[in-house]
Image (tube, rainbow, N blue to C red; front, side):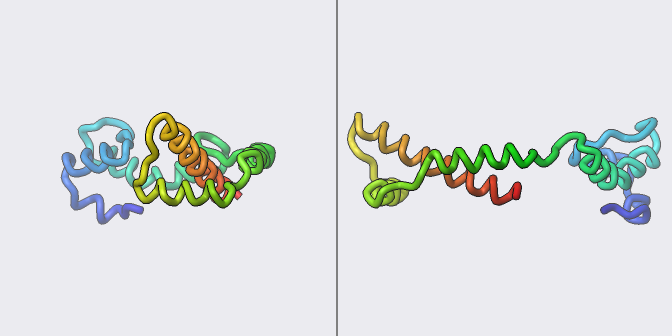
Length: 124
């Protein structure tokens, strides 16, 4: 990601700003450039090693993905009339109260299903 030559030409404040930008702590004393440079050059490989070891962010198991798929099936698909109401809602048209609450709930349910489908697609 960062090369040694790319980092060597930077000043300590510039290196410190880079570390702050990415949330990286300098290795050793913050008074030396090499402390910042070491951290900036090493963090990509450390992050991937942590993923491979199952630390931090990790893929959920097959059973979790099946659970999400079950939730999507449980939500079901909208009827033609519900799909039409979702479309007109997305165009900014709102019903009068108290029907507006149910209209918003229908839209939120539709959005939740779409996000779950995207989630399953990303995790599969």
